[in-house]
Amino acid sequence: MDGDVSAHSQEAEKETTRLWRTFRTVYEMLADRGYEVSDDELAISLDEFRQKYSDPMGYPDRNKMKIQARPTKIMEMKYTLKTKSNPNPTPDCGTVYVDFCPDASGVGTKQVRAFNHIVGESNYHTGIFITQTPISPSAVRLLSSLPNHICEHFQEQDLLVNITRHELVPKHVLLSPEEKARLLERYRLKESQLPRMQVSDPVSRYLGLRRGQVVKIIRKSETAGRYASYRWVI
Amino acid sequence: MLLKGAKPPAAPSTINWVRAVSRGSTSSSKSIFAQLKTYARLLHPISPNFLAEHTTYNMSTRQGSSPNPALRTSLPTAFASVVEESSYAHPTQEEQDKYLQARPGATARHLGIALQHAQQIQAQKDAEGMILDRTIELLEIPTSPSADPTTPSPEDVQLFKTALQLFRPGDYDNLIMERNYEDLCGYGLCPRKNRKQVGATGSTFHFKYGAKGSGPGGRGRAVDIVPRENLEKWCSDECAERALFIRVQLSEQPVWERRADETEDIRIELLEESRERRQRQKQKQKQKQKQQLEAGSSKSASTGPQSSESDITAGLRDLKIQEAGRSQELALERGDTGLSLRKGRVDVQLKEKEPSSQSAPTAPQLGPGDEMGGSIEGYIPQEQLEESSNTLKDKDILDQL
Image (tube, rainbow over all chains, first blue to last red; front, side, top):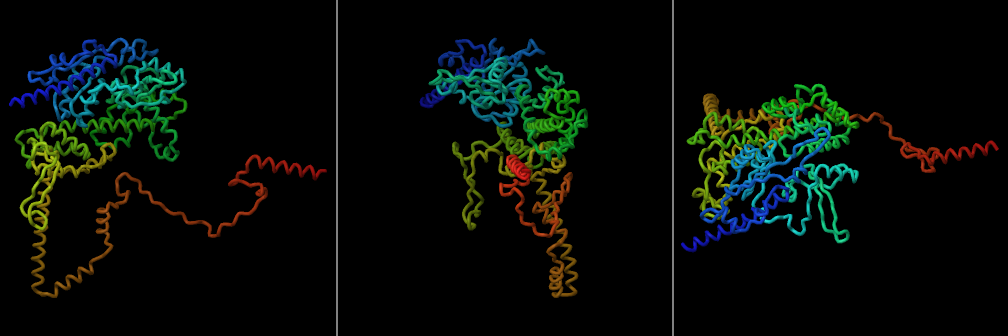
């Protein structure tokens, strides 16, 4: 009996640690995308996480772990396209909502429908749905079918480590529409002449990039110190 | 409504309808612009033959209420009406003109083909959306929790069958998966829960034993090793049979590529219905045989055993290798029916041209200037021409001297 309890608590401990890592990566991801995230939230320790989000059994309670964040001024600037006909445009970004799905298996259209409902009802601009297992193909389609909202999906294990912190992953910086226009003019290019990058690329998923955006990739170079290249997201 | 949305930068009207085309996707308006550009790029290298085939696509008829006929036939009627209602797929003449003015290289034909492709993509997206809606609807049936899968209610059957007309086997598998996620049996008309934890827990395979005497040589039991997930999809083996019986009837061709009548032709039959039908057929056949036997016995009573011999010879005489009706049947079975048999196809027959002249081709003869290399298939290179003319001039001068 005693062994059973300790096995349980070990299991709970393991799951809590894993989820804590995911949780931290989510905050880092939001910060990297340009949302307002406080330093406390970014540097949450395992003990704090355990206190805040675990249930009496010691397992993490995913229902409590809902995150909302507003975009910063810099991010809003990156997502606004100023034109002659529209001198005061509204930025194409807004409050983000992150939901952890509590179901351990079999995430289908039911859960996604509930998530879509929350996103639509509260009028969040972006929704991020995080599950423990892969979701069904119909659910994927349903997730992307919400008009005027952007819904993304991640698995917990995808966010266990922050891939952009790896030494072999160069820094990706999103360019604002003006910066993009300047770049294309400087090199006399059409955007289709830039090297490309897929929306499904892990880094572009991490940064929540959309089709048509351009990222600047800054790498270290032995000869030049720093080397910048550009990618057109398709 | 979509056309009156926020105005994007350049050529607003055109962007609006193109944006509407990829409605539902998360891509921004810019990308659709790029998408259309790629269409335009794709269109340029198209051969004139291809264009000639598609010139029936008339710009003036399409604008307004009448949709592209090709689109209408390729979709189920319900969907065609949706397309008809949406204005984005059919921009007005004004919008088309504006789009063309901004692009000096493009012609109305280019725009027409680009639009056709855009409409096809939109059709595919809408059809996929419709299949998703149907999948979600089918999660709700059977409406009563006490429904019996062997005798489902007519309304459920109706809903089930009409929804499945659109499905491909893959979509059907998705439906089964979704139903299992909701703890339901994979068969759409069964209200029970699916089996869980069949056999030993943690094992990925399950041993299924057949009836006694089903093994090889009529001894022992037959054993099937089945992946456990396949067993856990259904509530019972009967339901598995019913569900898989429906799966084999689904068409592999996606809805948006089917012709309208093809979708209507898919008649899905439940296992129970099919069994009933077959039994009825058998009974009919038995009755026929009985009648024939009775008739034959009355005849044979008079002629005796000789008649059976004459019957066989008569049968052999009637046996023909090439009988019109049977060969047609055979062709149907082999799938050899000509394209002309399908509605809406033009019957094209190739005729070989007879060679016109009987005479053998003459050998080529050495013409003037051929020693210099001559002409290349009738073309004389510029340099040679100049040289030959120079030599001519030289000669002339010599003559004059």
